[in-house]
Image 1 (cartoon, rainbow, N blue to C red):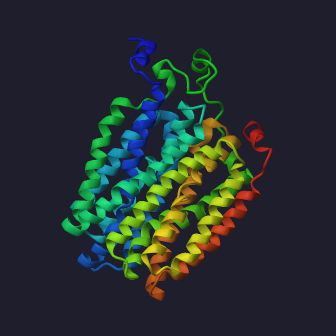
Image 2 (cartoon, rainbow, N blue to C red; image 1 turned 90 degrees about the vertical axis):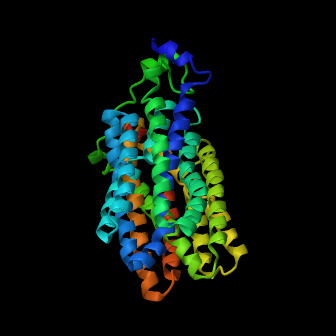
Image 3 (tube, rainbow, N blue to C red; image 1 turned 120 degrees about the horizontal axis):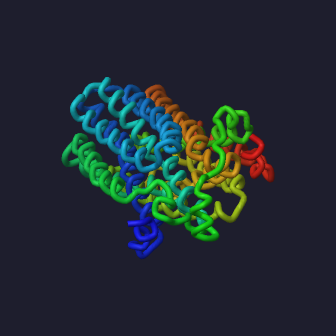
Length: 420
């Protein structure tokens, strides 16, 4: 069967099928990343491990999560998104079952810290951004936002379920449920994901014509990382994304649930607030994708980081359920809203062919910041008895990130890739 006949079997452009499968894979991977918020306290209770020791394992995982992103980005250039996604999901599966087999602190550091970290890092929005760029010329930032929203939807769908499973069945059932989710997605990726539109005899959605798009399938020259490191905008993007990770995955993603419990919020209230945060995250990220196709991405980033800083500044003073829901509403709007404009700026500066690799290292900076927050917030909690100073530090960094975003050059980005 030729390519055109293969593509004609589907009533819609095959890009939408690729997008749906990618969304599900990223959703499952994001669900795995929610586990630490649920299992920190049960691990403390069962094994007697300290908060800082468990937080260090989470930090190790976030660092390897970050390293998995550029590794996946580089492998995509050689082997394509499908193979990378399949291997990443298989690695996650191995790490989850390893946690159940080796319930020691060293096992936690190895299987959660390294194995799950690398797997989830490779199956994240870096891979999603690469797929979006290959399959969509029109509304590309919106699709990037959709894939980024998978992390929010993962929280929305998985976290209440995981909290319930932990309360009734224990933390091991939490890990088993996540392993099952990964196992369900694996065959869908194998059967339906494709590396490029050319495999289906198609061009990207929004290309001027099918023939022209297929003939122009190469994505251009890939900028070497050594050259990218010499560009000022790379460092502004990496620094702001370091702060993004510090203020999201590392701090709120890891420590909000323990913080809320220690301030008298019932688990069901916190779970509902986190679900609201996830829902607002989906809305905010999709809106950010739409806005990123139309407005100055630097200004959008500055607004997102400033808004996040204000919400974190107020969090330590929240003592009632209504305030917690208000925080979840406002903070949730820009949890990963930063991703579409960051990907867009990376693509503009370094070219489509370089996004997987260059954005992969920018994303590593994000997760290095997350790792720093995950560990340091645990230390702050043990040293001062609560997370107040950790939240204040995140607020200050949020305003700094807004300044970094506005410092990115405007009007010269289109020429950067050609000049390198």
